[in-house]
Image (cartoon, rainbow, N blue to C red; front, side, top):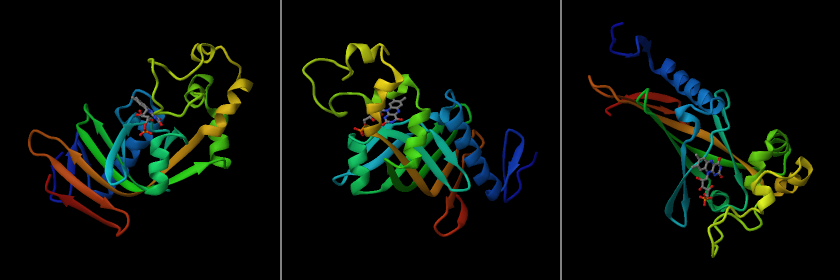
Length: 207
Ligand SMILES: Cc1cc2nc3c(=O)[nH]c(=O)nc-3n(C[C@H](O)[C@H](O)[C@H](O)COP(=O)(O)O)c2cc1C
């Protein structure tokens, strides 16, 4: 397959800008669905008192039509407070086997104690619910190395009913995606594209 002036050919598939933008979302959807996918655990950045703050999260959902990405978190965490004060957010993905990087920027929408969180909480496994059952908030200092959980909870010796109190700490962060910066590493020359949803402009870029 030949590369035309307007397309890029990856693994013998040709993509123009519109097709490439769709491919980004296919990859994000796969990342949300498949736990072993390289896009399953992006690095998410926020701003804390003018300083950068980054962490890995699990991508729970990618909605191409809504242009939304989602992850779960403890509402007592620093990121929750940071995002409540400044909703600018970015997510960084890199698939080493595809050699594709996505740099996503957008605005965070925080969900707590609403229908969306209730539905997601009900689907959250016992094992995952443990994250929301620490006595003290995430980032609290401790004199000893600790999970912050009681031994029983740590060893999953608790019932679904007993886990329900974790719901008060359970929050969802939706990223309303405003732009995607796509980069493909290729020995014959890298390729880069920018999808700006705010202006509706899709452009090739010099990598
Ligand atoms: C593979 C991996 C997945 C993680 N997934 C999440 C997640 O989905 N949500 C979350 O709040 N923290 C997750 N964490 C922990 C965060 O990276 C971070 O350490 C924690 O949330 C505290 O971040 P904060 O102080 O910025 O709020 C994950 C860490 C790793 C290594």
